Length: 342
Image (tube, rainbow, N blue to C red; front, top):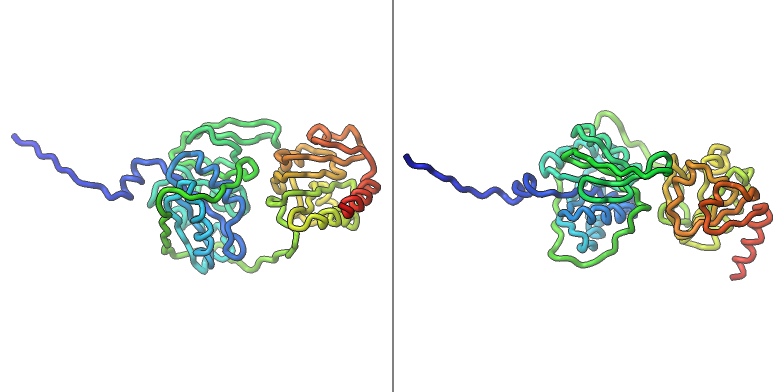
């Protein structure tokens, strides 16, 4: 009897998809084809997995410009940038994006799929996880290894260490917990691939988006935040905070506690906290904010925290690096005048 051995070579893509761990990062595109800042924090998190990284960009236009910006980060082991441009992706509706992302996952078999913690990814990744029958992991703050992570629970009062046994890990990354990636050179060029896809969405329709134009930076990217609470007493008094922020053009903006938003003193998009935005500026000044757990969860990672409150026993002082007890209506005008002279 004779035995016959047949040898054949698998295509490189097949070897990779079956044998090697790999990561997919959702590179979020914002207005004008720019790369969303939270994507840079996500790339830092992805690099800590020590795997080959692919990035995918969804958009209705200017995805090539976004890809060119992403190609500047060769030092992060990015092997491929996948461009998915289609008029059907206008508004980046999760009902349009998720099926295309699911097909890509079935084709490439990524072991980890990451996205920055934003409205965009929070609408897409849980849907994708449900379709793949895995447990999504939200707002990770630390990567221990390829299956163990840390995240906050109980409004930031406890840190959970978790281990996922799912073959595919789908995660959102808390941007304030990871440094933004820096541009740098690496080995080899980054491949750019255009993904031909048909968008089928009969569940929702993008109508319009109203954007408030402001010279002040967005809350997550501001270096300085003047944040006001219910103690400001009215919408008109919030002008005291805007006057301060305007002394630092391009660096400072205004935030608010949930109590101030609920009272109608300012818009919802200024809310900071567990049910608002998560921020970590270089300087956070809490004015007339008591320091409820829900608010602390959204700003506890700030580099320097200053509290101004007439109640010296307010919980916010326990978090603050510097505190000033007194009437904010006397302190703020005096502070504004002194800063104008600097």
